[in-house]
Length: 429
Image (cartoon, rainbow, N blue to C red; front, side, top):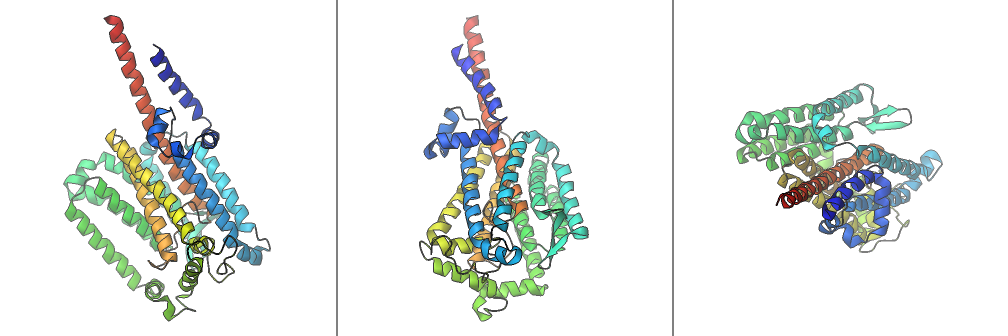
């Protein structure tokens, strides 16, 4: 009787905790040791209703991002707005807004996301159409919808909504995806439609992220090897043609291969970024001591914030940020595996999609600034300046927290039911 009462009590406390998710998370992170937070087995045994380590990782990356945006944006903010704190204030507002949206989104059950995945996809497509009609152009790309003081980068919510739709589709049509070409091709039709809208902005980086994530999800859903080989061949061919027949993309590739051939032209941004990495060495020049951020390196607080971080904190600082990002990715993939084991297929595929997405986007961002891959204009998740990216990435982390919460609640309720059944069986005897 006592055990049954304790489990029911845990369920009631869990529901109460979820009413104030952010306050509960902050209080718990302060009072709980780092070891326990990152040990999922100990958290489940102690009655926690969601994995606090997701919150800790996000908060750490928020803080690092805020510090680096403040350091890297001051010179350009002083010149453009006569206020060195312009970008850091806006970035802080984006973080607060993200946390507010997180508090609301955490209350939404995963069944809602699955049920409304098609409507969310339509909303994503509508945003991509609207941005082509009335969007604001920056540096030759039309990617932003201006709503007064707020600007929305349409590609960011479109990515999340497409991954939500794809996860729901794989649940509905998993057998078709595994057995025939028709089931495999349907989500690709949707992808190519989105890709067509994105290439008109143009935004090749987002297309590549979506392609790789789609490729990975279809693989995890059990599609056949020959289908992957065909998809990979078509994808690589199309991307190659897009690069070859567009002069500015071809210049990016050639300058990436040898940026020092034209260090004051097509290779300027990359050479400045490489100088930042070189000056950083192992432990960096110290916070605020970057030279490249003094308007030598373009986009120092957005796409190339990792270069400034490398200059000021060196290899150790970059390693720390990569470790945090990869920890978030690994936890997302492990969560997907747990959901799959409990036959929560939509939750599993959605968690896998978020893990692949964050992993690839972080790899491309760091790789571009370090000269490993061509520049693609992708932000560093939860680090770079950018409101749309910050809000959508926060929403992705919240979805992971919600999935973990529902899996834990299912386990608690299953344990409660078993104990009740045993108690009734003992009474009957």
